[in-house]
Image (cartoon, rainbow, N blue to C red; front, side, top):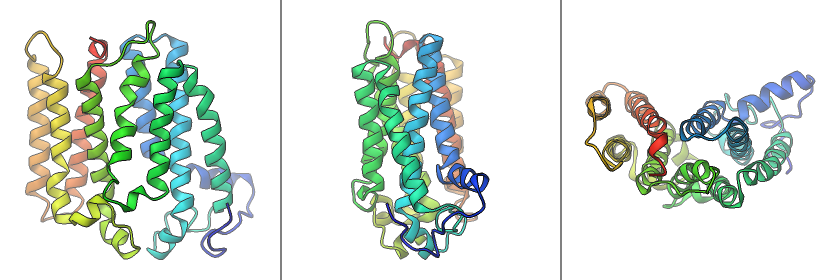
Length: 291
């Protein structure tokens, strides 16, 4: 837990305010907030009580904080080499040592908070968190870079439902849809940084395919997740809302593909929009996750 480069990971000298700001930026606040909000909303939708919803949200928050801080601490030298001055550790806003300590504290807090939902639920959630740490520690540079995302997202429905009375398992389509959402998130997250990753020696699954192929592939797992969430639940045929969701996701994916040549950011933005549709479907179908 030492600083990789004193120039790239300077010791914070401006007091606790700067340290707090650096840690807040280093935790990947966007994804951390999004995943925490998703699981909390899913817990509410499935009928967990207020305490259960708070515990689920706190467990996911601490897990995501640990993952984000671990990622930035490990990648400090690589981020500095790629000129990513916006990264707090690489830019010297906070030291790598401080981020490592924060990551370990968050991980330690995540253990009892996860197990508070029951040992089955907690074990699955911790498995997802550890898979993400595995990504940070090296899987991101292999052909299996997608696997931690699939595992990390795929266990979330089970973490929520196993915390309900009777510990019911979630429906298969919910688990598979969440895993596909994770794979899509991996592709969309990596897409803007592929060139820089290759320059610094990161050769994960998306980097080996190249940006052009990844732009074409990003919508595939996300649209598959949409279809599972609309057509997977048994019983009545999808209603108007379900068909509208499929149409909206398809239109967004097509827009990303058609406008990819004009802007490299468009496929990323449209992929995020399709993922948002999937998240809405997942939460809206919360009551049927254990059916």
